[in-house]
Length: 154
Picture 1 (cartoon, helix red, strand yellow):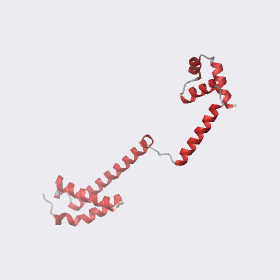
Picture 2: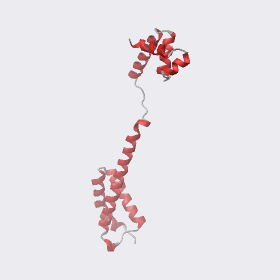
Picture 3: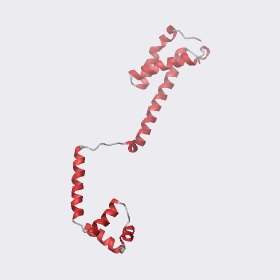
Picture 4: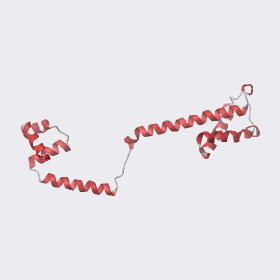
């Protein structure tokens, strides 16, 4: 069945109004209205004996609007779930200054330590090694490594 322009144009305003009710955006409602009529013309699934063309178009509009809203909701949910994985922060000048200030203070503190003590701290905190691993690598008793690491905090 072919749908003439005059036959569908009389329903376009109702379809647009319903689309705008669901989507709350004029441009998106216009896009949906276009898609509803395009689907009608391409699919040719409307049967006059099943109901009026207006009812069919409004039901299709409702269905397609709800699908779009669900797609948007699903995309937001996925973005929220993965936001931390893809977040790329550019450091602000203030955080750069704070970071470099902290690094300078850390370098001053490390410079005040003995070579052995500095090496133990670097191995532990920079390389993530356990005190047992450090003791084995430096051929030192475990108690000495623990003592040197603890002396920092006093």
